[in-house]
Length: 254
Image 1 (cartoon, rainbow, N blue to C red):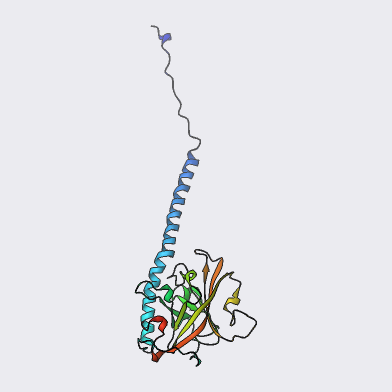
Image 2 (cartoon, one colour; image 1 turned 60 degrees about the vertical axis):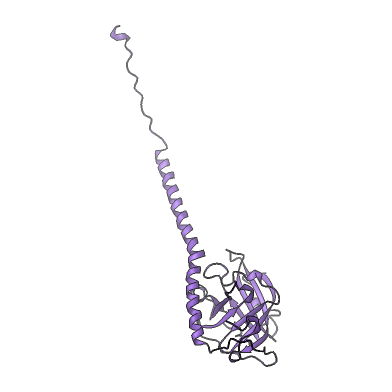
């Protein structure tokens, strides 16, 4: 075999990948999105779970402090007062915890639903940290007018989470240093955030002067949204002096 008959070796040139930089960018973007997803998941967990844990701990502390400040109330059923006007306290300073809301419909087993009420509806200083807030300039418990309250329905203890379960005739009991006020639910509705007439002194006729003592609960609707507001109205049915005992609606026990 001659030298001419030997074929020269074939050299294969390695082609450069045209998508090298693009692939690296896509990989980086994918990692970034995964990281963002993890951070978002942690934020959601904090928002929906950890804020509830913190709120429950603070609620226990607030309730204990309120118990120490409120006058004793015998754990016996006292006759309801319906003819005499109830005592009405002055509005407290902003962010002051001054009352407690009891909702028998929301009791769980042997655990009675009770949440403290503080003055004001600012999120940072009241709703996110203290729980239920009282709309400034609305009536105080027992007074003629509208005792209007706001509370979260999701996160931060979600005090009004079960608000859609309330029915006409259900009890909303407000406890203060002066008395126990028993309101009965009269209706519920869903409104837009701009419909502020629901917390007017006379929510059934905002243009007219109030003639009865009423209560209003307000919260966001639907869950995980602030698009609308869920509203529950009630009117004062009876009251019990604090030093006489407790209303039958609570079984005479706290």
